[in-house]
Image (cartoon, rainbow, N blue to C red; front, side):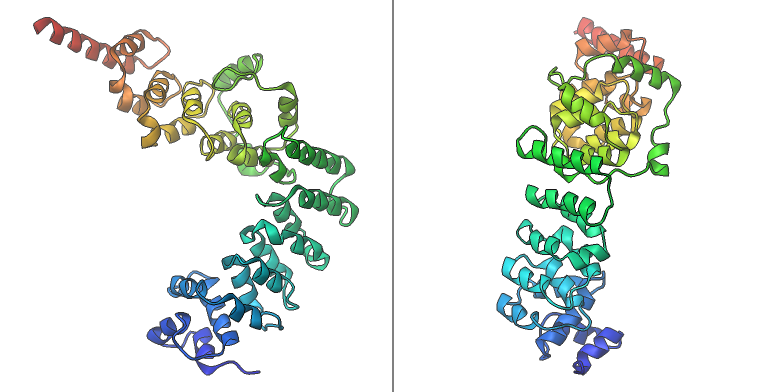
Length: 371
């Protein structure tokens, strides 16, 4: 069946812009199936028509879409449009069962799907056998139920033979621990371990002085910002993780995971800890005081206006010998006089910083005398 000529011209790029805008805005009388092809073309790539198309697509009635999504589509791009930009479970189920659905579309759409329909994807063995990455995306999905995560690992081992039995056993054990509340939920989203990338390897390079500090720190118990010791079981689990898994936990993990991972030598891990959306101000102040933390982490802290409004964070940052001198010089004037006096006597910080602190203390003392 031929496509409407207006839609054909739009897909070819020859439709005048005003008409194209009217088309993706739903103002032209074209068949729904053809309109979906135009919307998919406009919305699945970044074009000047994308936002207008998405705005209109969001208003299309579910019943209208469902009526055209039960039949084959050629090309099948509108299926991806629905899976990525609509949330109605019944509509998504109809789309996921469409005979034109491809593995490529499913792989591109899984991160956008709500948890309620993930089982439909998992049950389509033909598609995930074609693209194994679909299983990874299902397991990493934040709304995936634990039964789905278990089945993913069973399929990896029993059907695809992608992982050793020991890896399967460990991952199923972690899922059980998460479900029982013994581990943070982020553990259930761990990716499969990978060989260290060049970027990850380069991020572990550090000076001998810093490495020596880290060796001393490793001899002490791991404490969080409140002085609570991290459990041995969690520490043992963390030590078994690959770099790519630690990076994911740094991004999503809980307080105990962050307390452990900030001690890692890898710069990428540390940076992702400080960017973790769940991190608290107390943790930031604790990290700002650490002498084994990468300078990039300290710069990230100093660039946050919200964090730098908190005196404990500013104080920790300025008093830390690891803080880049320009950063410390920018913020040291905010210290209380008692802390300024400590700073001017601290031989661990740069001489210029001590000298400037002393100059300010002396100026304040002279001002008091004259008044």
